[in-house]
Structures are given as structure tokens and as C-alpha cells.
Length: 227
Ligand code: AMP
Image 1 (tube, protein in one colour):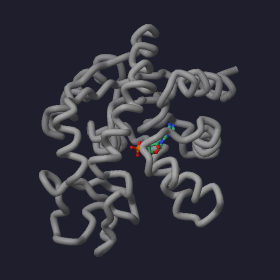
Image 2 (image 1 turned 90 degrees about the horizontal axis):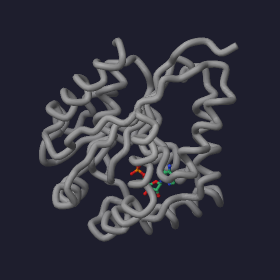
Image 3 (image 1 turned 180 degrees about the vertical axis):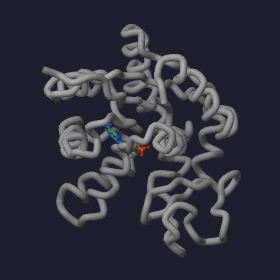
Image 4 (image 1 turned 120 degrees about the vertical axis):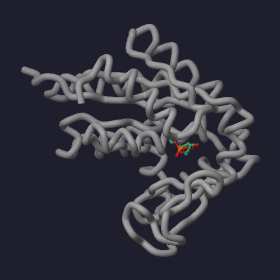
């Protein structure tokens, strides 16, 4: 028997749409963790294993990583206790195959899940400008942006308090972002129609400032979830 209903929120959108930041905000509100497959892969990349080296080559060309590799990392994470009350997905699924795999994976768990997908749409012009200005804390992965979100105390992470641990992602260059956008339009955009057909899609305008986007997500989610 499955026990009722934990929530899974899936954030879909092109690179730089703000899914990472909105995932952090939603995590606080829902009390669930955010799983970013990009972060899982970057952690793996840091290890100097042959898999880590292979990942660097793929990710730095803006291509998607092999489905099975991502799925294995995600499975390992989801099967930990902390995810049993639901979770937020940032960066997964990235294609229809992954969307099907996610469904199969959830079917094998003893819980039933209420799934909501949020399409954070944003114009290409904004994307490049946002991405070339972003950086993150390497300790806790909190995202920052030179244009609109710097740490309150210079050089100290607002969230974990680490000093001077900021870095720029290797794939956040204009050239690679353009390739990532192509991949998004070809492989990930169809996932939006997939969830629309299932009747679980919400759409928000990611062109707006962080607070406004978060407010729009909040008011749309509150119509279907209690938190
Ligand atoms: P992100 O941090 O979500 O922007 O992802 C950075 C990079 O990690 C992407 O450009 C892909 O190369 C890889 N990646 C992240 N999530 C996935 C996924 N679900 N499937 C395949 N590749 C992924």
C-alpha cells in the first residue's frame, strides 16, 4: 500500500531562468530539499575519476549528460530518507525519456506523489546577461549574481557563512550558454508539453525580478497545495 501524498515540484526552464534560485526559495517554504542534477554532476566532476573527467568534457560543450548516468545519481539521492516527504527537482527531467524514467522510479516507491511542474519562461536576451554575471558558493551551492544578488557581507556566503569560497561555473560562458540553449530548445522544451498534457503544468514569467517570480509561483502553487 502506498501512503499519501508527498509533493514533487519540477522546475523547468532554460539555463539562467532562475530555477536554482527559485528552488532555494521554495525549499524554505515547503520544507523540502531541492535536488539539482547539475549540482550532483558537478560534485561528481570534481572527483578526478574517469566518470568525473568524462562529465567535464560533456558539460563544457553544453551537451546533455547520458540519461543513465544522471538517473543513477538521482536515484541514489531520492532513495535517501530525507526525500520521503517530497522534493523539488531543478534540472530534471531534461528530455521525454527522463520524464518517463522519473515516473517509473516514483511508481516503485511506497509513497504516492503529487507532482507539479513549473515552466519558468524567460527571453533569450535576459538569459545571456544573467548567466555571464552569476557565481555561486562552492560550499553550499547558493547562487549569486553580480547584477542583483550579492552577499550581504562582502565575500561571505549569506547561507553557510563561508568566506571567499565563491566560483563561476565552467559552463557559464556566452559560447557554451548558446549551445545549452540549443539543447534546451531541442530536448527539454518538449517536456513542457508532456506535463501540460498531464494537466500538472503551471507557467510563470521568469523575466521578472526574483521576488516577483517567487510571488507568482507561490500564488499559483497555493491554489493546488497547502503549505
Ligand atoms: P544545470 O546546472 O541544470 O544548468 O546543468 C548543467 C549541465 O549539467 C547541463 O548543461 C548538462 O550538461 C548537465 N545536466 C544537468 N542535468 C541534466 C540532466 N537531467 N540530463 C542530462 N544532463 C544534465
